[in-house]
Image (cartoon, rainbow, N blue to C red; front, side, top):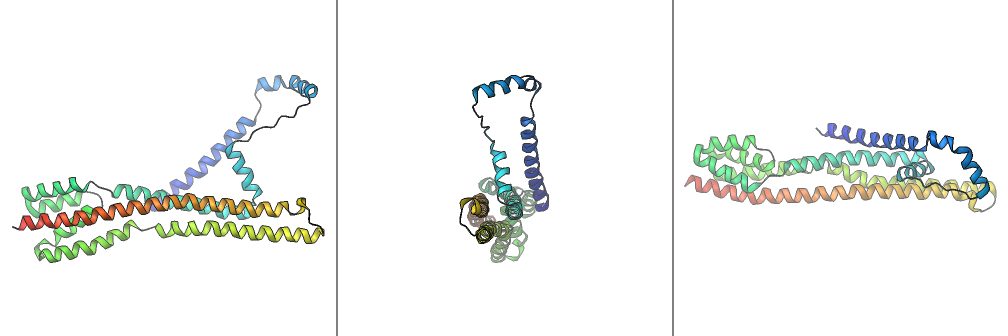
Length: 264
């Protein structure tokens, strides 16, 4: 499932880049009306002698800055963004599907216990999605062994369910840390190149060091942007997990109360 979402994310990002590139290319091509009016436009430009500066779109600006930042150092940062977004999207979807209405589920379990007993409640929990229903199922499967074993089973499987919720977050954290580090690496390389140019030219002039300094600044800039984007997704996932775990704990207490009442 995770690999499928990762593939979808990568294909979507690459398709978006290709589409924007194609749109920019189409926009840059002159139409027949523009071609017909070209001689007149040239004449007007000669008479007016006013230079026209075209405004670049956001995607065009990103492409230009990406190339200016040196593809060799910008590509690893871009890969961190793509892979980090793939893991983030997969986690967001998984956590969204893991959320359930615990009050409604408890009411269903209570009705099932009254109608068909433990077996009916087990069937209900088995057909429901989410970690809360899985915890209830594990507890019901130990009902014959006593309420103490039910409580131990709920506690043990709760830890397993929490581990599944946090799965993949370490990779997102890795890309959050790695993107700025790669940017800083490009910064160091760019500054070394700038000093090499100064040494070769024997003169400190803006034109000599501009290229190296541009690489240094752009790689750091893109690395920080990638880290900020992934950090937002990471914190969102942490909040989702905290909410689900809180529901798991509250619903487990209510579930044990249901079983105690049922045993009476």
